[in-house]
Image (cartoon, rainbow, N blue to C red; front, side, top):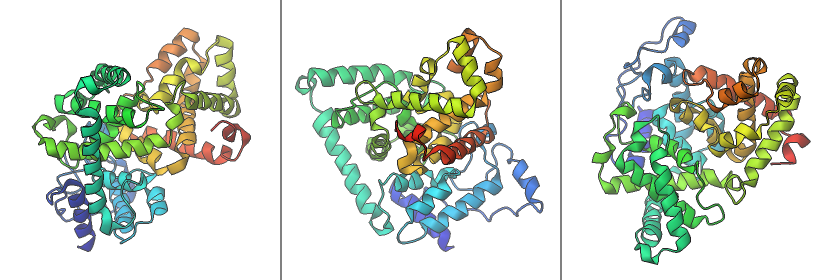
Length: 396
């Protein structure tokens, strides 16, 4: 009853229309035996509710979270979202473990501070932010090229070259409407953040936001979304939400993208110290073979590790990143460490050349949420153990 009314309110505010979250069908009766329910994600195509933004998306076979998990997470989140003032710390704690897809937009927007905690002012804030984004487009993007500086034109050219290479495994981002969105958002951010400007890799970092905020408007599997048919006005609204949330996330890792990318250097150094502490054998083996973290982790950090995972797991990774709040940057280092150590045994049997090839294309394409959860919980453990030590603090 009331819970769903609220869910509907959340949805309506984001999309400006009431049809986005439909009332759910009565929840399927829980399986008697809890364990059995957990171990059997429901077959592709079935979903816990008839909601148009069903929890089935991406490659259904892999991405489906077990129903029990998804229902209990949804209940916990709705309790938090259902207050007139949202408790952000509580929201971060629950969201850290993953967010059901239909609640993702609202949870991300709250945790990134795009939406205020007071639910009554959401609509006004969003209208205001979307208008501000339109104003930025007018000021920076929609002026004729003759009025753009040489530097701005160079940035625009670079973004236009990179846009088609974005996340090539996902056809969605190659569609012309989204190519235009990518270019506009990245260009505006470069104009408003001259110290970092545009850096290759940011085009990929932006994609989870586009995907998640578009899922508000398009039901079902992302392979079926006809984004080219969406009304321009609507697309610019979604773009505005993406732009502001992308900026908020980037603010937390700004020095990874300023000139010379000092933040990435710090990440690599910290990871080197940590690897010696958590997996000395791998560290020694790499040293013996002459393999340095710099050889492969710069790319990892440049895309915040998203290029090392199949796209259907990236939004799940982003749930945790965003829930980490101000700890996001140091936490990325621990995720990279946990990811590397996952392959420790294999790597120790390889020589330099084999290791490089393995690490440039990690065999994660078949991963399910379960493997990612293992990496995240390992990262969490190490973060807890090391967070107050010199190793981490001297360089973050």
